[in-house]
Amino acid sequence: MPLSSPRDSTIAVVGDGFGSLIVFATAIYLGFRPEDITVFGTSSSPVGTYFGFASNLGQTVLRSESESHFLPADWPTFAELDAWSRRSLAPLARSVRRRYNPGVPDILTQAQVVAEALGWDDSRMPCRVGWLQRAEGTTPHFVLYDEEANVVGRAKHVMLALGHGPLSFPPVLARAREDPALADRIVQAYEPKVYVPGGRYIVVGAGIASLNEWVNVLDAGGKAISLLRGPAPDEQDLNTPRCLFEALGIDAFQQLTFDERIAFLGKILKGTSPRRRSWEATIEDARREGRFDELMGEIVRVEPGPEGLRVHVASGYGPDPDPLDVTGVVCGTGFVRSVLVLPLIRRLVDFYALPVEHGALALASNCGVPGLDSEGSRLCVMGLMANNVIPHGDTIAGLKYIGRRFVGDCADVEGVTRSLTSRARMQIYLASRAATAIRGARREKQVA
Ligand SMILES: Cc1cc2nc3c(=O)[nH]c(=O)nc-3n(C[C@H](O)[C@H](O)[C@H](O)COP(=O)(O)OP(=O)(O)OC[C@H]3O[C@@H](n4cnc5c(N)ncnc54)[C@H](O)[C@@H]3O)c2cc1C
Image (cartoon, rainbow, N blue to C red; front, side):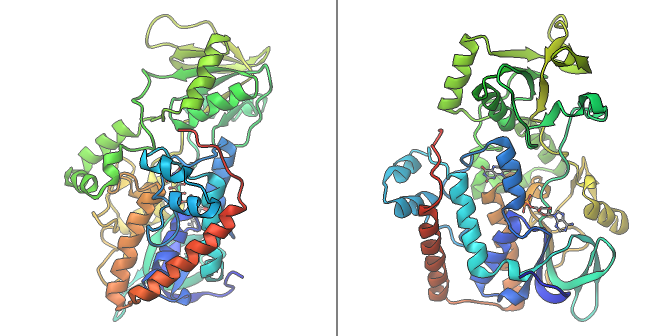
């Protein structure tokens, strides 16, 4: 049962997604009690938001590998857990070759087990936070308010785990979506959609989401036209080069100036797509059958057409192609990346004059919010908002990195500890409950 009245806690997490579960589980592991932590958000499950996007995309296995999971410590890895759970060596064999990706049902099952076993929902205040105020004095803390300006709690340390902003569309398509005659036929990869057999679809972009949609269209018996603004991006699993997932890479990244970091991220995050054997085969077959085409250019106009839409494309690489008659357009263009689209952040930026550069909060290297974060009362961010400090901040591994640092700092300040044996017992208990539950989860095919 979620909470029904405001409560004071040592740690508050604003946001109810993956990040909140990682902070919550890490805090219990390090010795905090559930009543020391409050999670603010309206979802009754920490996987709800991710699951919505992933199922619309048709994601079956994670892009990340064995280390990305929700147990507070890293051991056992997910491949070990899977092997133990299903009595199979196959996950281990794949993992040593870096060819193991946890199945989405498995990882969601594990997250639910951790959340239930630790009582995540019992520490959740079911509201969205609209505002938080710094309160100085003998014990500096933050006062949190909901979107109707009611006080919903106070906390000494706050983690902002707000997730992504709204979905992003190229401006011409965003405008076209305002026309009821066109709106239903222009969707985002992360939105619900149905492809009709024999339908013809333009897929904008060449990142992981677009690649997923090429295959979804082709699997449904449709034709896909991949539309790229420029030449295809480098092959890349996950969103950032693997070296940046290691501590050394993060250190090197943090040596760059803020402008250099933003420029670097702009380069490496600009649509990266993994190399997947089964996807390649699907696309190769479709290409031979004349069901997959590639086009370079940008959509400049959309109007109703005989098949649903008539789309005009301007090419930066030669003469413009003839208008395309298609059933629909799907955009793998991700989320609006500016933090200013998040109402809570926008208000904090306006009120406290927080530094924002190129749409990103200029965070300290420990993900603290400058001016509001202090050693004795921390205010940090995680997820996409922390990408300019921790390049893989918006992955499970990145959330863990940030969450551990934050909770570790809180534990030091509060003098909270938990013995190694007690931690190990907790980890083994969670791992064995997760292994039992995973046995009953649908097993997804590995695609790497
Ligand atoms: C389709 C897809 C596939 C992915 N695949 C992978 C993968 O394979 N491997 C990997 O490591 N990562 C993957 N990721 C990234 C991963 O999902 C994110 O890193 C993770 O969900 C971010 O966690 P979060 O808590 O920051 O945000 P979320 O999980 O999005 O949760 C944020 C929550 O906070 C709520 N919220 C926002 N504002 C407020 C407020 N003011 N008050 C209260 N609540 C608020 C939101 O409604 C939302 O429910 C994927 C992401 C997507 C979208």
